[in-house]
Length: 147
Image (tube, rainbow, N blue to C red; front, side, top):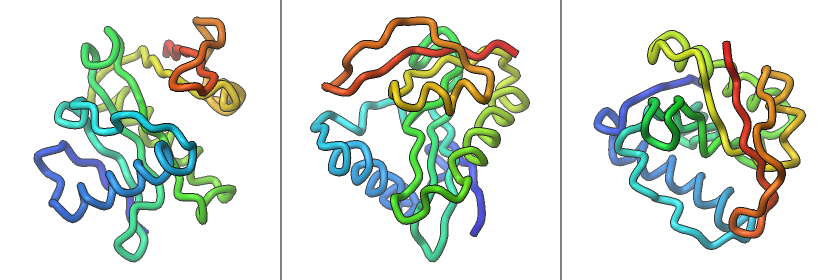
């Protein structure tokens, strides 16, 4: 298993296909949430992911400041169902934050988190900056991390 981080232009078509397949599986099919998963932001993002046997098993989209928010952002955070509960999400987030702080040179990170993950993100220092609201029928909260 290896971690990779690539700009959109550095992804092979096979890597891009595997990423979009898993993101759609989690965010559209599993969560029963029909929305436009491919939203145009991928072109400006860095894609952090872990592969095993040619499959993407963990993924996060790292966005520079000015794409989703005035701050840098992490989004589309997911771990393939069969690989949950073994610490991949924590490792993924640590690697994503390290990249944003060191490669982007950003100290502030803003996310839109599903409400049930408030504690998970809070354990990394994120704090809520909005009340809970519905996005595509799923409770969300905006959170910020200031280093």
